[in-house]
Amino acid sequence: MRSGEPGERPVSPVNVTFLGMPATRPFPRNAARAVRDSQLRFNLRKATRTIRARRASVVAEVPDWAALRDAGRAIKEHTLRNLDRYLLQLEEAVTAAGGHVHWAADAAEANEIVAGLVKATGETEVVKVKSMATQEIGLNEALLEHGITAYETDLAELIVQLGDDRPSHILVPAIHRNRAEIREIFAGRMAGWGRPAPEDLTDDPAALAEAARLHLRERFLKTKVAISGANFAVAETGTLVVLESEGNGRMCLTLPTTLISVVGIEKVLPSWRDLEVFLQLLPRSSTGERMNPYTSMWTGATEGQEFHLVLLDNGRTRVLADEVGRQALRCIRCSACLNVCPVYERTGGHAYGSVYPGPIGAILTPQLRGMSSELDRSLPYASSLCGACYDVCPVAIDIPSVLVDLRARSPHPWPERAGMAAAGWVLRRSGRLARMQRIGGRLRNLAPRRLPGPLAAWTDTRDLPEIPRESFRDWWDRTDGGRR
Ligand code: SF4
Image (cartoon, rainbow, N blue to C red; front, side):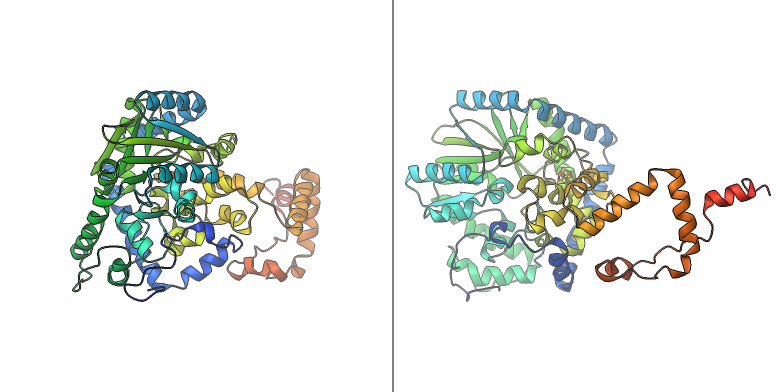
């Protein structure tokens, strides 16, 4: 356990989010610490390999996967190009169906809107369906400042919340925990949050699931306000769609008398016909299932339930204005790119210092937050550029290209800038290059085997290429292309 005695309620009844994380420690330092944790690496390797294999097998079953992927990319591209039109259509449809639409420019505005809506109900507790958008804006902490406690109901989010921990994966937020650790968290912390875990709780997965089910069932039945995100929002009818695997989403979405959904503006789709494509792409890419177990859809307010939709910008329109980076907004948060990433598999999600870890986090976070912190500037380098993320992405986001673009835009130290400027000056003219090659050939014996000073880290794991005695051009001229 990280803190507290068994049964003791945590000091701060929210799951710790990345808002409070020092944003100054760059990725390499976070990663160096993570890779020293052998238990973490074991948990990650086991989990990512399992999901990866499942995804590969169910994707291989679909003969037109490439066409489906292309359709997903094209639909998202079209929607993003006409985002203003589809968002207004969505607002009109939700309002016509009895819902209320709110527009939030940033995290602070979204949090104020949600807190105001909850306070208007007179309630001080809310249940939540797993939602990346609410984690992105730090909603749980903001609600707590207003005296409102948010209870996570997704099993993995519950583990994270009870463990006073941070999510480390988009789809499996507690991927870094094994079942023995989960048993310890449940046994020690559940009582402080509601129904306690059974005395004889074991680390058998069925026993752990049953303990969570009983704990959550009590919560569902007594809480009057729910907060969700949405995987998709269909503009033509104003329908919101949530995909989940446990049924907790359905409980949250149907039982409470007030439902508030916080949804990023990029989640809109024009029509049901478009939705059909994503209902095939998402389950296979995320959990490796042919079909999603629980798909909930609702349109506006229903009898006995008030509905509010908060449309969140929080940097998305800025990303949309970027010609290279905007493709990150196509993301459907399937997490396939995380599961194939060799960097993520070794470091886990916490090293990324953001609610969005892995390859998608490395391109989305610096764009949403800007590159003012050392951490955000380091994220585009959290990749080997192997391209595995692009290969599996169901909406064909070219993550390596965006990473390279962001690297070019992040500030570089003056020696690097000076070195690149000098290299550019030499390479611009073939005569200059030939002269430099000849000088290099003459001085080759003076060239160091290892780079000096701060550059030494580069040659710690690589050999510096030897400077040839004679350049290829000179050899070609001397031998007439090898004929003499
Ligand atoms: S970038 Fe692609 S693969 Fe990664 S989470 Fe988003 S949709 Fe999935």
